[in-house]
Image 1 (cartoon, rainbow, N blue to C red):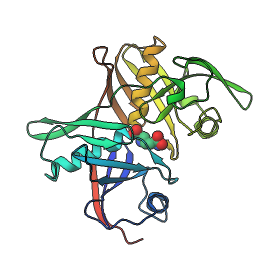
Image 2: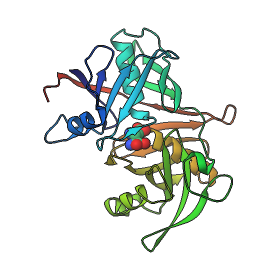
Image 3: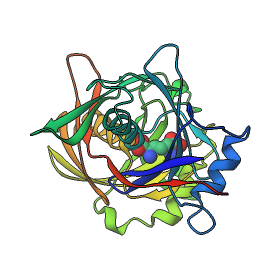
Length: 279
Ligand SMILES: N[C@H](CCC[C@H](N)C(=O)O)C(=O)O
């Protein structure tokens, strides 16, 4: 099975064009094998490009633990770049069907070179039941107290098709991510678990964010998480709507448009190597 190894700000993926390869039945088990950083290729996710009857292609994304996610911001930039530069879909605006709906990445070029990808990530979802979250109250969960093993967190819950629990902290570098991350990821209030973002606000247009991803652990960047972070920052009146999110792996530009309520994410996508899977 041929693949391309790509990353978006160090959030790395094995990308397989499933329309040209013989795929096994159990893609979850394959993801656990391929994403293993010692016995496999090593990645934060296994991504398949599949046929679609409602968009140019369909993207499926599997976490290293084998769980399938609804959407992945860094991966969709990689898939868009792959499809464009291989002339598979010779359009600068590509429609990609995901479990979170049809997303529209746009290739950004300067002097004929691809410098990045801008993705219309759709509208954030704030209704607790649709996050999903077991939360009685109607309306957005903004600054609600969640008790986790005796510690209280003020959380803001946002879905970008996948669930995010955003927490503001004075200094992200001081967060014991490996301790707090899994406790929040698997909290029973999130029936499908959740991604967890810790955010340090620098000013009205810049934040620093570290992420503990559902099914993956700490990653260097999270595209959907950066979008959820800006939505939460605006809802908590910490930032304006156009924000640079500084992640361990680099920066994403996020804009939550007041006109159409959609979130736009702009960032890089890098091809690292091509290979053939033997495991
Ligand atoms: N682990 C995530 C999927 C990958 C999202 C992240 N890598 C991104 O760039 O959006 C989840 O289970 O929702």
